[in-house]
Image (cartoon, rainbow, N blue to C red; front, side, top):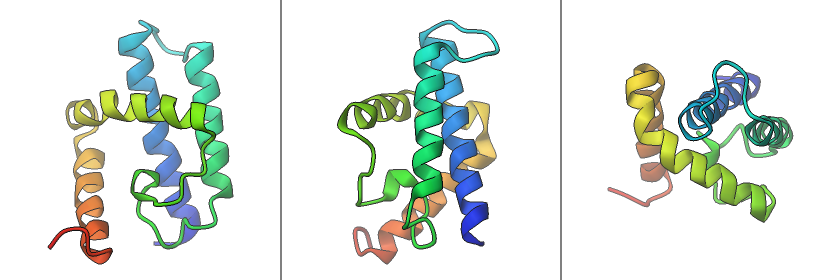
Length: 112
């Protein structure tokens, strides 16, 4: 898979997770609340600028944390909430993420 495709997939997945979080936590319908819209824009900007996209699977697996500390805390909160729920909302994407994460961990020697 080429780098641009990986970037677009990453941005799409993060946007879906933010939308799920926003719907459940902020009770929005359709559009994101201003806080979640800002986080989504920031996450997309960071994905567009990532110099490691060609060698990593997902931002959540990256050892380099390029988010500002406050935005990193917000995105982690979204990931903790939305991650497990993605299996019900986007099962194919959720399973692909788990499989790719395990491959990346094996590649890095984190699991056997």
